[in-house]
Length: 406
Image (cartoon, rainbow, N blue to C red; front, side, top):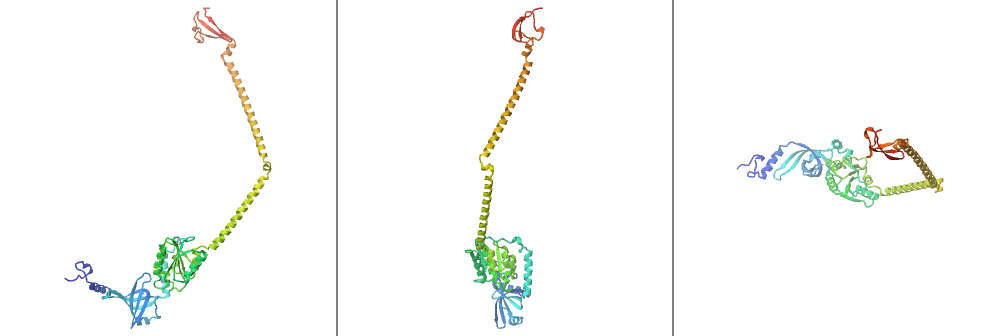
């Protein structure tokens, strides 16, 4: 049975053998055109007219084997060395038997300083447009971190400067140190790995990335886009302490705090215990002086108050209050007596008025009150018949009478 012509036509029942797949890949790659690529030379070996080098990506851990004629290398203005960034014109080639991809180089050029600076400037503008350098996204440093994460070169002067100066300022401060390459092809990847490791530790409250000074090429790893984005995404505040004050890799712009030197980073990450103690002693003395002055001022006021006449003889106030109470009591008594007298006169006036208007007063003037045996007052002669028994009431007593015809 013939083999399928296209990969889409294969199936579990009609697969390609490995050799055919290798052949098809080779045919596909053979159709690719020449391409310029950029990378970092990590290994270079010359053999009988051909040079073999490993070209590594500057941002990720990926590399290709490159073959180039030695005369192409010798035609360069200056020889290249491992660790240098280059651009190479290559034609991809696939080795069918080994199933490996190599790059046949036609031309090779080192990346110049001017071109590097232009690329760094473009990367800066791109990251700035994304807001990675914005002040509002930067995290504040803790006052006294539990543990300091430090990423630096192994047994480097930068490590010594950070650790010794930090412990001089605050003895006993803890460090989690990750020693990594800080220059060369593996630097950016190793720093990113150490950053992720420290950022995952809950006790690490601040991370310092430190390195001594150097050329633009030496510090190139700290302008790596992958590293810069990893620092921007870290949950832990990051201090950049790369080189000297004049060195400004992109890491300085994206870090939460930039230190001009590793020694400066130590002063940023922990307070100075001696200075704090001196400040505390100064504040304590000032507070003690203020309290003493306040007590003395209040004591003088107390002396002034107790020296007044009213407080010299402590019974004076009581006597004056007693006199005032007696006066108020007498005033209240007189007012009550006046009210009682006025109400008594008013009652007497009402009594006389009631007496004058009473029926008794009418009887006293000679009038009489005539009632029938039932006590009903006689007000009309038609109420009385001849021989009716009536009772007459006068001013002093009453008596019965009988009605007559005359």
